[in-house]
Image (tube, rainbow, N blue to C red; front, side):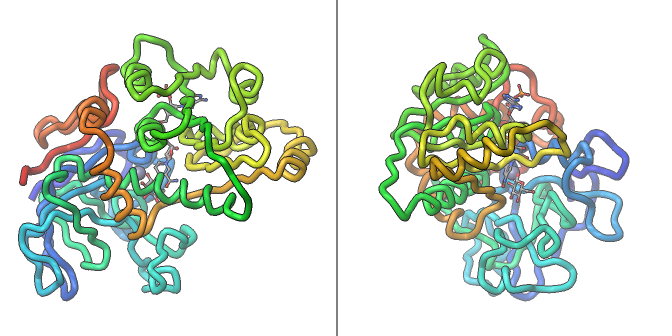
Length: 352
Ligand code: NAP
Ligand code: BGC
Ligand code: ZN
């Protein structure tokens, strides 16, 4: 079967012919429908994040998948069920406390593999297998957008953690600043539909992401004109910062954009960066203004289920505008090398 993989030393993924997997006991065989591409995939291709499975010199890409059960193989699924796989799998050393608790998303990097990212092949192949416990069922009617369940689940978890950190007092979330007008940032803006939202990028009009933000009723901020620390004076301080740029300075400057009692959720996965920071002011502001920073990575089954619900609540027009590119296998490069008009891209292996 065909699979899209990155080979060691290469800078672009290629189609490889790989054996169709056989489901082991407890696993189902899934026929892949669509697999999305995000910033992490580009970091993996660039060799800045993740790695190859042990002893192998290629990695099948893709962690944002939706598929249909081809062979339930004695699991609780029926043939034809539409499913979304979670990303993390136990490391070669075997299961551990995080997996046993069903909280693989809380495992440190050395206690987990990530399919399509770190040490385990992903879902960009005509078929994949998965233990049933890592498959989340979703309604057929939303199957075409099912590859968005994984990225939505990322924000479900981060927003849950942010809210939890503010749960010991009366926190009124009225205003948020999303850092990053990329695939994760825009999805999160759409999810924060009941509050005032600013979204920061570093580009100017005309740009499809800014047009989408206009349609969502959000306010676009160009970081070249208004850097994050200037948000409170140029606009308003915010109750929540959601960082989805991977720009390391934002970890510190987010705190300056917060109103008292606010929280910053950091999602980006940056490279090393050294900078001069007034740590005294940073520390003092966290303490004296009861501010919090939470880091959040990956997501668990509860967040996937919340994301499935969210998928049915978000307006259909949003998906039509947000997902600009769904490439068939023979032109999959378009999904990895999008032009200026593209926002969210995916590869389509098959239809329901
Ligand atoms: P993406 O599509 O590459 O989006 C990143 C966006 O941030 C781009 O639009 C980029 O603008 C913008 N940006 C970068 N630096 C900026 C700056 N200094 N000022 C203003 N805008 C800036 O990536 P993504 O898929 O949305 O993911 C965002 C980040 O979250 C990545 O670091 C990714 O690895 C991480 N991530 C983490 C998780 C998790 O579980 N924690 C899950 C998914 C993704 P330009 O395009 O104009 O450069
Ligand atoms: C994926 C997560 C993963 C994270 C770190 C994100 O793009 O969506 O599932 O845990 O990258 O590798
Ligand atoms: Zn991702």
